[in-house]
Length: 104
Length: 367
Image (cartoon, chains in turn yellow, blue):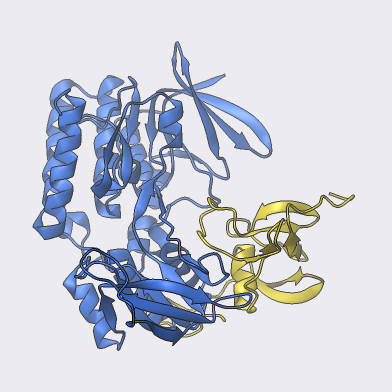
């Protein structure tokens, strides 16, 4: 959910764009990290662990823990908490260690 | 290979302050940061800082960040972004700093190098701690204050230090409900003024409590709290189940010291400052000549002390580069020490003052 009204911060005027999460269009704000766009749309499960398929989401938010890695435009293990969105970006839930798509 | 007088790793409050001092002295300085934007964690700090006027007390963190960035721009400091530093190597001309930029390995030699890499949040392990919805308090703070997104609606905060208290309040400001703040110790760790704010906002603070477990199929659904005795053992029968979707962990910071280990710095262990700290002297110079540390890597404190340590390391490096005479540097450093000592007073500051004094004694071969 977006923070719309805030007692201290001014209105957020970053331009809107669109990215794809598992094939579905979701809105994003220019310059924000992928993880933030996903959370804003209520997506919290970013990947599944390799052996047991346990769900994982964002944890550290500074690019250290790699719990938030996803497959982005065909490239696996992209840290979504520090990678900014781009118009039309394709973000996919990563299964295990992920797989390189043929295009990437 | 390119060579400059000073390379600074990390463009947060400490690194930027250091770069400003070196540039002011007339030195050529390059700041390298792995993030897409400089400022480190300053821009998520929307609260007013403490201290006196010269510490910019009463000014919000992001305004301090904006001021620092403007100063670096005015002074012509070069800042390389999206450039993670992965290695330090000894070189006859100084220290070689290797980094990735645009997918390529690159390197630059700094006659002096300052590490201002900051710190990372500590994790806490309990059943369910890996579920989506459990995150660092700083992570939640970035989401609400920088990205303007609520990471959840019903939050349990763990840890009553200033980070836990401030982020709880900021979550409430952003529109979340903070159902409880949980603290294992018998008393609140941070400033009373921050604790008062969240209490007035209706958040109960459970001291002597911890999280027993978090339940949920694919994400946080329920959080079970339990009371602890004076030996931090769970007291059976005191469990309390709360419905929540988010757990924020604010249980301290660990300095990001990898590069200092790589460089061969000698370390000491001071739990109060976050664990292993590179030994450094009054000039912030480590046991590797020409290599300095500043900010949280030199002991996790606050942004205000990080900026002062940054200034100190910058002045000292400028002196070592002969941009200042010994007398000029002495006077400038004395000013910084006065301000820094003032920041390390009071019931919380005094402990950090003592820990830093112990560190300096170690550098002198005391201990």
